[in-house]
Image (cartoon, rainbow over all chains, first blue to last red; front, side, top):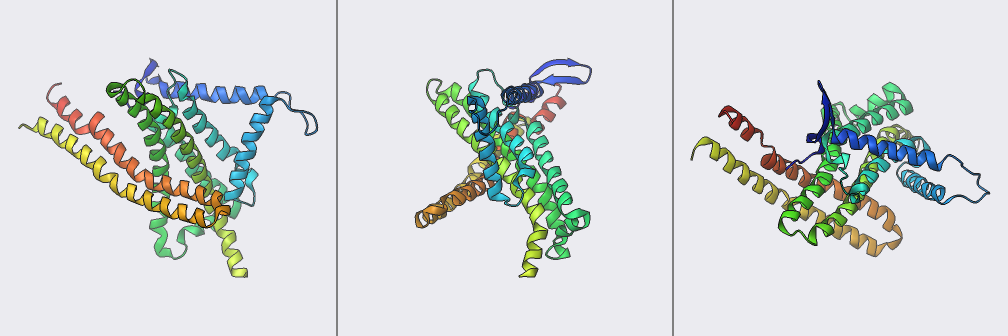
Length: 231
Length: 92
């Protein structure tokens, strides 16, 4: 039984291989990009009536922005493109499981590891942009220098946890449906698949919220410290 | 029992034990978290938004432990490295 879409290879030439993960990632990227381009082609101002699709996309953007504002109240719009893109990518790839023949690219460890590494790099970039290199590096030796190895270990383990959590959840859905097809092929796979839509969406939410929490922790540690000394 | 069948039996038993024991502790932890969150929401229904968001994040954190066990069981059953090594060694 193939447990990841990595093992389905459509085309290979030399060492270049085109497997299902890459193909469906490209499909998903082009779908999201084309849809956004198509909807935002004729944007109208605030006073004129909007089209149906524009309303839908604005609802998504406003919801994501309000969620980010709850976590990081100061400047939510800086992190909106990053966290919103991650959320939309994972959520769409999970929700498209209702399409027959669709392999979710997040069911492969390569995709989830890539997303987690993106988050790990973005945390450092946003932290350095906000506090400068010295100020950002100082939070590794807080509260005492003795905590330095634990803080470094925390960076590695949370990136690993992000990748494995998403991979395990999404992969287990397709695996459970496959096992149930062999045991009770009529109604139960449908129930589990509907349940899989729910957990896939929750996992997308959790991935985006966790990455936002990490970014907010890297950005806010310095300002909170200043606020405490001022009080 | 020769070495090859020993590896197979050990892998299956280890995968089963890993999944069985590894889901007990996260289940208890999630139950305690949900109990606390429900009683907090019952006391302060206005704060249900932040409470449920924090609950979801915490549940995901706890659940990831069970997910680690699940991934290890899947590796042991479907893509067992020891089994692959032995079967390639024996000329398979």
